[in-house]
Length: 251
Length: 262
Ligand SMILES: Nc1ncnc2c1ncn2[C@@H]1O[C@H](COP(=O)(O)OP(=O)(O)OP(=O)(O)O)[C@@H](O)[C@H]1O
Ligand SMILES: [Mg+2]
Image (tube, rainbow over all chains, first blue to last red; front, side, top):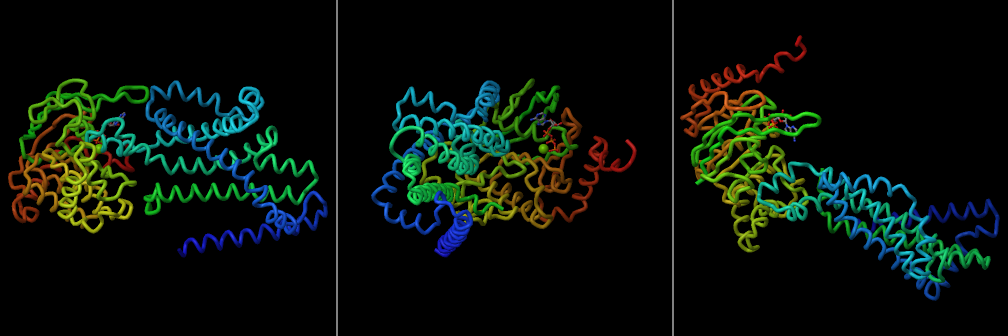
C-alpha cells in the first residue's frame, strides 16, 4: 500500500513540475499555438467523456492488439532462433537485413492493401513491435547460462521442457524491457498512422483539432495520448511484477 | 543398481577453429554404492567426464555404462550437481527441488510430499516459498542436494559442489554429504579441487592426467567414513600421497611458475 502511495505521489509531483514548466513556456512564447495548461485541462475535462475517451479507447485497442500479436509471435520465434545455432545461421542475417529498415515506410502500401480502418494501423505497429521483440528474444536466448540448461537436461527434460522451465522464464525480464521500450515507438507510430488515414483515434482527434485551429482541444488530445502511454507503461510494470516475481529478490 | 563403468572413453570438443580432445582413453570402474572422488589438473576433463556420465555428452569413442546399460541420454535416477548448483532463480525453493520429479511426470501431490520430506531433511523447510536468490551459498548447495534426494538418485554426480563456499560451511556440508551417503549408500562421483575433501569423501581417489584426461593413478582410502577420520594420521598420509601424485601430473605447475620464468 505504502509503495502505491509513494508511486502516486511521484506521479503527482512529476505532473506538477511538468505543468509548471508548460505554463512558463507558454507564457514565454506567447503564441496561440501553445496555450497554457489551464485551458487545455479545462477542455480535457469538458471533452473527456464525449470525445476523448472514445478516441482514446480506439487508440488503446489498436496499440494493445498490435503489441499482443507482435509479442506473441516474436517471443517464441526469437527464442527458438536464439537456441538453435542452425536456425540462427539462416534467420540472423534475415533479421539483420530487415530490422534496420524503418517499417513506417510501408504505411502507404498497407493502406492500399488493407484499407483505412484498424487493419493497416495494427499491421504496421505489430510489424515494428515484432522486430524489437524478435531481436531481444534472440539475444536473451543466446545469453542463457549453459549450466542452467545442462542441469535441467540432466533431469531428463525434453527440448520443450527446457524451453518452458529455463528459456522462457530466463528471457521474460528482457522481453518486458523490450515491450516497455516498444510502447513509446508503438504510440508514435500509432499517432502517425492515425493522422494519415481514418477518422478515429487520438491521432485523428489531435490533427482534426489542429486543422480547426482549436489549440486547447488539440492539447487536450495530447494529454490523452500521454496518459495512454502512462497507462500502458504501468500495466506492463504490474504484469512484470506478477510474472517475474523472482527478479525482486535477485541480488 | 548403479555401478559405473567407463571404457576407453574419448570426448572431443569442436572448439573455435580447432578440435579440443578433452578425454582420451579414459577407463574407470565404480562399484555400486561406492563413493569416489576425482581430482586432477585444471582443464583435464573432469567436468567433461561428469557430463558424459550424466548422458549429456556423446562419446567419440568408447562407452559409458551405468547399471550395465550404455548411457546415451540422461538416466532417471542419476542426479548431477554442477558447480553453480544449477538452480533456477525464477522458481521457488520447493519448485526447484521438485523440478526433477516434475520433468519426469510425477503427479503434483506426490511431488509435494517427497519435496517436503527432502527439504525437511536438509533444513530448508521454512524456506520452501523463498527464491534461490534469497538463500546463502550453503543453503543453495543444500537445495541442490534436496533436488537430488527428491529424485531418489542412486548415482550422484557432483562437480566441485562446495568450491564456492567458505571454509566453515564447506566442512559442514562435507559432513552432510558423508552422512547422506552413509544413510543411502548411493554411488557417488565427486569432482573436487580440494585434496582434503577428496580424502574425506572418496573411498577411492582418482587422479587424472592433464588434458586429454585419463586416469593417472588411483589411491585407495579404506578409512574414509570412519568416525573422526579427519584427525587421523592415515588421513594426513593420504593427503600427502595425493599431493605428490598431483604434483607429478603437473597440477601445481601454473601456481609455482606464477610470476616466474616459463
Ligand atoms: N564447450 C566447450 N568447447 C570447447 N572446448 C571445451 C568446452 N568445454 C570444455 N572444453 C575444453 O575441454 C577441456 C576439459 O574441460 P573440462 O571443463 O572438462 O575441464 P575440468 O577438468 O573440469 O577443468 P576445471 O578443473 O578447470 O573445472 C578444457 O581444456 C576445455 O578448454
Ligand atoms: Mg570443471
